[in-house]
Length: 300
Ligand code: GDP
Image (tube, rainbow, N blue to C red; front, side, top):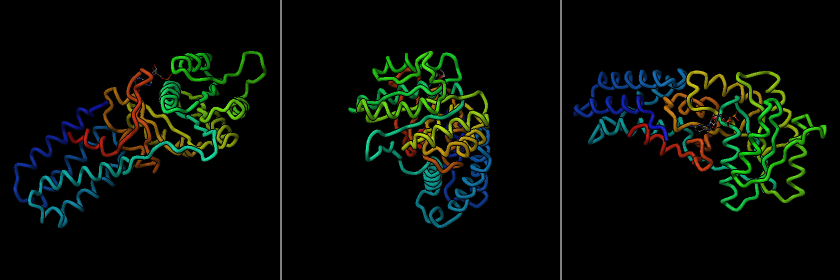
């Protein structure tokens, strides 16, 4: 998984300097907060998130918990750690299953974000856990998308529901509904609906995704976002939140040289938890997301 190289190095350096001091003056704390702020901004973390984060860290660092601490510098690091965990969503949030199967999970995100790959990874993991997932191909925009999902389903050993060429099912909303009905009849306890993604946020795409959401009433709507998206993370996440009101986030490509921006902005800006981290092109490269472990990784 990404180590957030530069961000991590810069914070480590900041704390190394801080540790050379015994008691901390307000000027020491201000200097440290300024360095944290710059490191986060350079890592493409959204300005609003950085401002909120640094103001919380500063208020706490200037308060009693640091002035009374035996090791004030260590206490500041602890505060930064806690506040990082908070912006990453606090507690781990697991995938939610319906009381009455099938559980319907809809995926949304930009084209190339890693949706189809994630669909396969999730199906494989669910199979391993004893579920019987059905992948439903509702990306009818990209000519090769159905084929790609079929290949992924085969590799994952999961069943797929795809519109057959020439059978008149050219409407992704109808396909989604038919897929859920099929799952019910064939005793699949989880349905994973892959939807179309465009290169940019697009009104028609959003309407289509929103119609699929209305038609299938999913238990989870997962927004898949490429960790390397940088400063566009917030605008993209907000557009998908307005469009499909997603319930959780999947950070994909966390194995790449992500600078940290998307990871650190999205949960905080949308108030939706990150549920999975996708960490490679292989179908086993999927991990549940733990805010505390991610924070430790950044501060390591
Ligand atoms: P979609 O258009 O959203 O369905 O995106 P795809 O699933 O087709 O993924 C786009 C590209 O990103 C493909 O080349 C995938 O192999 C690659 N990809 C997807 N997830 C990951 C990941 O977690 N790590 C890496 N390194 N590549 C990924």
